[in-house]
Image (cartoon, rainbow, N blue to C red; front, side):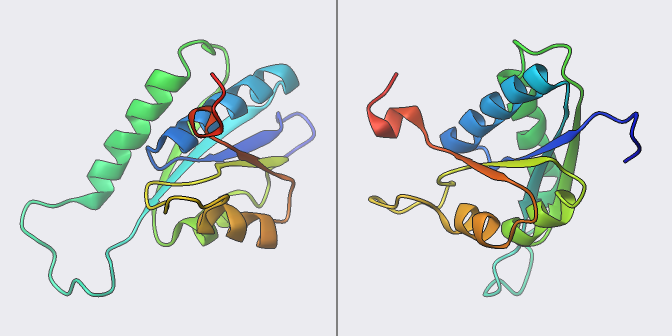
Length: 147
């Protein structure tokens, strides 16, 4: 990144309500700070599945999900530049790999695999613990009883 490049805000997206909230929060912050967004989604085959079922393309499905989230959640932010990245691998390391030049990393508090009663998910916790830039964890307002 050169001095003329705008700052980068990386946001993790998995399609959950929490990640959608993180996308909206990141877009608002990008608008306020003149930053660009980098929306990152990852996918990974579970270790216990040894054969990929016919017709399943997790890369393409993840790209579709990310595109849908970006389109639906950024309607109020048409001037915020956004790039989309889909990577094969665990979410936490994928986010940190793409946040190396970022001024901020934004994640949802809980992803799609959240268990009831969790305050923070494993990906958010990983990013807070190992991130090299400030990390914002966005809670889902519906789970907090806030509208």
